[in-house]
Structures are given as structure tokens and as C-alpha cells.
Amino acid sequence: LFFGYPYFSQQDLPYDDDQRGLKDQIVFKFSHVVAENTPKGLAAAKFAQLVNEKSNGKIKIEVFPNGSLYSDIEEINALKEGQVHFIAPTTSKLGMLSPKWGVLDLPFAFPNNKAIQEGLNGHIGNQLLQSLQSEDIKGLALWSNGFKQFTSNKGPILAPKDIKGQSFRIMQSSVIQTQFNQLNAKAHQASFNSTYKLLVDGKIDGEENTISNIYSRKFYNLQKYLTISNHGYLGYAVMMSQKVWGAQTENTQQILLEAMKETTAWNNKNSIQMNKEQLELIKQNSPIEIHELTEEQKQEWIKVLDPVYEELAPEIGNKLVEDMQKLRA
Ligand code: LMR
Image 1 (cartoon, rainbow, N blue to C red):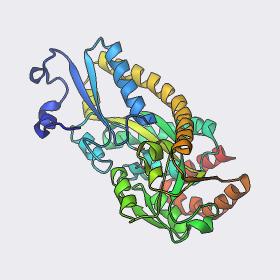
Image 2 (spheres, rainbow, N blue to C red):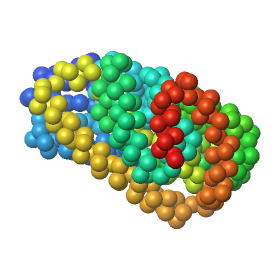
Image 3 (cartoon, rainbow, N blue to C red):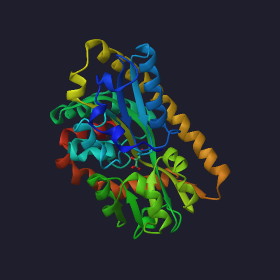
Image 4 (tube, rainbow, N blue to C red):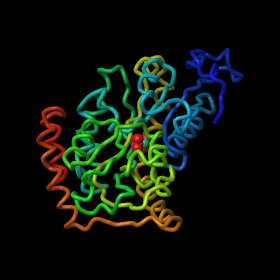
């Protein structure tokens, strides 16, 4: 994508109709870092389409995928400064806003997709979205991508001892960092868009991600081994700045909320299917060696990683961690 820089500068705030061709049209920018053919990419496009339909073309959402506007490290500040109007960062990256978000990154926190939906739609999800208020952010929805898997070049990862000494790119998260420390692996916190190059340059042995991110970013072309481990959750918090939200008419707010509700329901179903289909595509299109943890192997990982619950509970919040543990039971 190429756009002249001035196009993105301060004149792009909503209601700035005079600068645009369409009189009375409100234009919002939605920036995200993944490809278009991913759960988040498709949900952002669907949201834009629904908002357009529901407003009869009066509200336009311009979606900028692939980090073409802002990286995952930059986007929260860009939102706060009003340079972009919607973002959907991975919840793992929201530790800078509140340590509570770390609860979703605890190892093997969700035993299955049903538990993810229970967590996101219940007390845990509500509390997390509410926590954004104190940062002047309007939390709109939680979109799920799915479970993280391990990819590596050093050797198949089946037991916790296999990952020992390996270097991994991880997201910007102290909770994830703690888990890699617990496994005696080296974690390198880096942006999503730098991951491909880190792998090409051999600066890391592996990374952890959902199948849709491994597929759409072609990490599988650079890695010899993939383990279906489902060891952690990856999903998104969709947000606006409170200032931009509060500047909208009730009618606009209503349209945005309705479209978001429909998109969220669609996304949470679609993402499971997408990750399944793209795993098949990886199998068909690459010689990568794929392993799936057996129940017994999974229990071994849980045992090794479980001490981080106690270690991190004071930071995340004891009650929140307790609630999450109930979902695991
Ligand atoms: C990552 O950084 O690996 C993911 O958070 C990317 C994304 O937005 O799904």
C-alpha cells in the first residue's frame, strides 16, 4: 500500500467534511497489523461494510491492514492522539494500559473454544473492557482469533524440555515473558511485522502464534516444525478513543454498536473455521513437520507452567486469576 504521508495528518478527523468529496460523510480510520485474510482482517472489513450499509453510506470506515499505518507498538498512542479512530490490538499487548489484561495470557487458561466465549462474554471480558475507561478509551468488543501454536527450526517441541534454550519471538507481554523464563527459553519481544525478518535472519529459532497468523504471514515457509499445542489464547480488544466516541451523535453511536455486535458474533464463529482451514492449507502447501500434543504431553506442559499462576496473580489481580481458574476446572 502506498499513500502520501500528508493524507494521514491531522485533517483526517471525523466531521472534517470540507476536505472530502462526499458532503456530510463521516470517515473513520481502522488500523490493524495482520493480513486481510485473517479473523481480524475479515472482521474489520465486515464491520466497515455493516456500518456503511446501516448508515446508507454516511459513515465510512477505511481499513488499513498489515500495519500499513501503525505498528502494534505505535497504534495505542496513535489512537489516543486521534490519528486513527479504531484499533484492535491483541489483548496481550495491553499490559501498558492495565496488568489485568495478562489474565488472558495465562498458560492453558482456556481449555477449549467454549471456555473462551464464556470468559470473553462473562465477568472477565466485561471487567477488562471496563478497565479501558480510566485510559479514556472506549472498549467496544473482544474478538477472538484462537489458540497459539509453536513453530521452530531447532527441533520438534513436544515436551517442555524441548523448548529449553531456544529463542522465540513473543509479543510485548510480561506475562508471556514469565512463561518463557519458566521454560528456560529465550524470549525476544518484538513487533508482529518484524517477525518474518527475524526468522529470515536467523535471529530467532521460533515463534508462537495462531494458525491464521502463521499461514497468512507465511511463517510456515521459514520453519521446520509446527506443534499444535493450544498453549495460549490470542484475541483482540476493539477500541476507540473516548474523545472521538463522545463526539459522535447518538445515531452514529447506535450504528457503530449494532454493527460491532453483529461483527463480533460473526468473528467468533468464523475464526475457529478459518484456523482449521488454514491448517489444512499449511499441510498441503509445505513440508513443515506437524506434531499435535497428546493429552498426556499437554498435562506435562500444564504442570511445568502452572507455577506462573501464583507468581503473576498479585500483578494481574488475585480475584481475576481465581475467576479464570474456575473456567479451567
Ligand atoms: C502478534 O503480534 O503475533 C499478533 O498479535 C498479531 C495479531 O494482531 O494477531
